Image (cartoon, rainbow, N blue to C red; front, side, top):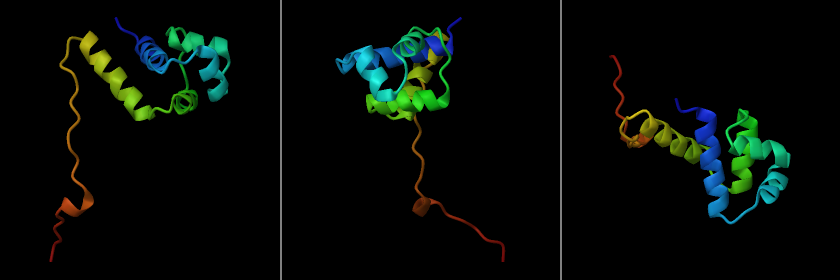
Length: 100
């Protein structure tokens, strides 16, 4: 069974490493202890939404993109097809009807 916290930690670690940044740099920027960030990346701690927002801010990543990446990994581990974002019409394209 794949745990959400492990996939989330893996995504955060991969993004941090792809930026060439250390745990120390990101923890200082996110105002999170080095040890706690390390535990989050290893999937040992459940991060609150506030903590995730702070880490994503430090990594200059939209939280929504991190969650999309995690969702795709979870779907893959469950043997499901990868999620595909669907286009959402803008308000101008939406037609409303009124009863007269």
